[in-house]
Length: 432
Image (tube, rainbow, N blue to C red; front, top):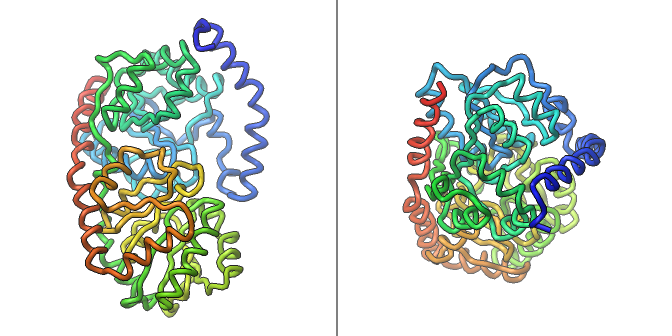
């Protein structure tokens, strides 16, 4: 099937989009019932750009919260260095939109990116007329890339990663994938093996390089120490043993709570910080906590007089990095279910020994770096998760050692932001 002509693939793709069009509206409305933000600004998703968006900007597409956080220092630096140019950051999710507002609101414009329907993409380009398109990580959409190419808008894929699973999927699209890659001016990959996967799909070797991951360049905010101390005092944590389960998904919360029950048998004063990946799930997770027999304090409803109960539910956007600073050991969610795991770097910069489940296919190279340093443990169920947490609680010296090792892994992999800055400065100079 991958040997089909390019024209057949393009026809099949456009036909699939035509069929999907009415269902996209239905899905947005359905998702808005659980996450109301998905019901807002729907027109932007079909290329109807607000009048406040400037024409001819430098356009960064960062998808969701993680990509936005990683790209923020890069975008902020470039917007300062090129004050004569406007910058636009698009996302696909409300969490990504919230991070643009929190980290970049003073230096960039923001709207949602159009879905890859031909008319929506054309409408967006005709209204915005971007000078340069910078795609973060794996956001490859055939119509978006093809329209940029047709309009002679240089398009780059930076901080690019391509898992084995994703590479197999792109390979099935044969000629359409190869054509899309040929329309990118450069692909700046995180690691050499990712670069090789793009080459195997037909990318031009002269347009592919491995510059490292900008996520290793993340830094704690200036108010991190003060904010962590304030939360510690607010919840009277003191010297209580604390562990965190960050960015959990449905099916994991029950496992984490079962593990905390076992941890509490040996450490009755232990506190669990449970942070769902999507705050819209907070009510459901709160019910699980209560049903498991634990007292629950919701961060969004706490005040200066609240003492920490058994479980603190992190249901406030943009607070995860501070919560990592409160804990002694971190479990990274999305790894006990088939999500592929979430990036452990934010926990690592806070000096956390790391624990993940077996599903780590989203970040195999990052996970391998921490695992090789001996500061990341893989677990498979509630029992092994509890055992790992208990091992750290019982050995503070080992906890400190592994936390420092995690920070050293981050420090030894920094520098990608500077390399990408050098690349993007040259591209922006060419179009400004």
